[in-house]
Image 1 (cartoon, rainbow, N blue to C red):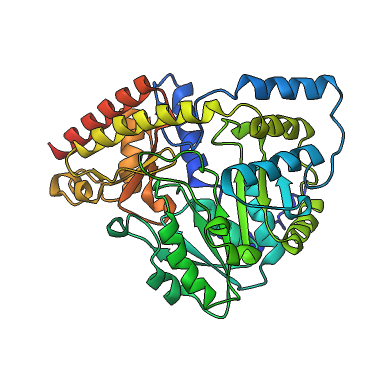
Image 2 (image 1 turned 180 degrees about the vertical axis):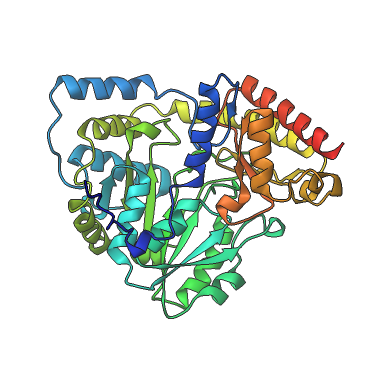
Length: 406
């Protein structure tokens, strides 16, 4: 029998693979199936359950037969809940036709990029950044323009770097605050400084990925560009969702507020791809946004304590240094000091990827190398895990380091 051999990937995904984070999680789960006691600190997923009131709203939606197609980009009830959330929490006013709902904040961002980028349009990113940003821009035909942001600026973009990165082809600046993977948070002053640059370049819009909005610590306060600089509202897309704050990753529910022409263009993309989001998830998300909000502060306090467990332990290890993150639930630690030690290099570990592979396979803790986020010499730990698991994982990591430096 002849075997068809004519398949080849489309050029737009020729050099793109499944997320390395997904591959690390799959590797860790394969070890678990072998009976290994692997602690998974690689995924960006809260370990808390979805709140009961949200689950009950979904059950009620099923029992009342809310199981048919909905409006393309969100039910009126969910859009009204999102509209009120933006007003209540962010001081932003959006008409219902300036709101889009999609199956996950990732899909919403993808819709924005597909709807607005022409071939070789540029999108400015701060690095380190969530790895999917780079590939989504490329699939949409755009060019990611990375602005490396180091520890000495707390991983924040400076106005000078933004100015230098803008060209006539620049379409968007994409900001993620609080940040995955660093936990960096832009305050009002930092956003206003960036806005001063953007005002000189009216062809550049801003996409704000605010998915970790409710996870800020100490004296940090969440703000977003359209609220801090309302004169930029007409060229700003504000993206959010319920996955991180309400532990609803599997429900796949994200949303955006933006000028109506952008929302309409996003609807075209969604109409020819996923179509409407899940009706049951929409009912659950409406309850999450409009129901009791006590869970947000309660879980934020738990994450804050977990942050201390991880960061304190990391900074006690030889060759490891970790800034205290102001938001999200990640610790982004430098391991370059460890990798530069001759005794470590002599053991065949010279990169962050090799270090993370060693830690997973020899010490049963799954973490993500910084090279995955476009900054080698670091690794990311998710502290969205129980206190006991975090303490055990940090003990294993300390043992791994001590064996390397011996």
